[in-house]
Image 1 (tube, rainbow, N blue to C red):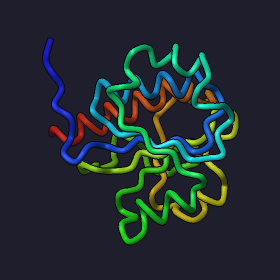
Image 2: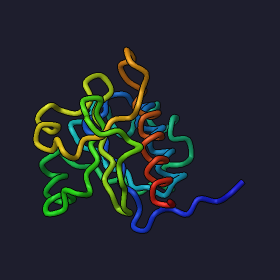
Image 3: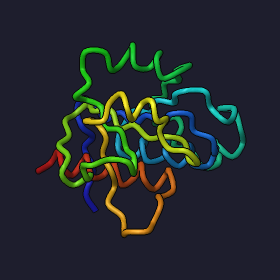
Image 4: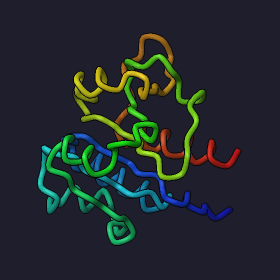
Length: 161
């Protein structure tokens, strides 16, 4: 088994309006084991104190740097302004596939809520920053926690090549 050295600066995982506590807990676990930071952008569909959220993240919560933002505009003002090339908006409505995308340390990997994905206004505002995870034709989507895992590890792999 090999140890994973996190990117410097770390990758930033951004969940926009997550709704299902166990998914967010599992994403936190992925962030902990990869050294990625986690941003939760409101409105959230649950309380951060919910038992399911804590259970899904197991004992990894202490190993994750979590930042909560009231809204996308609050997040964008603090982390995106002037650096849109850092954004990677994961959506099935993207023209570019994940394996063609280039990543850099400190990039922002942005994922939408479980039922609806990213808000259409966000995708429309940044069409050149959208990226899709390849899937077989006729299949709709992956579970949020799985999609984050695929995206984070693909970015880490791309950083090492």
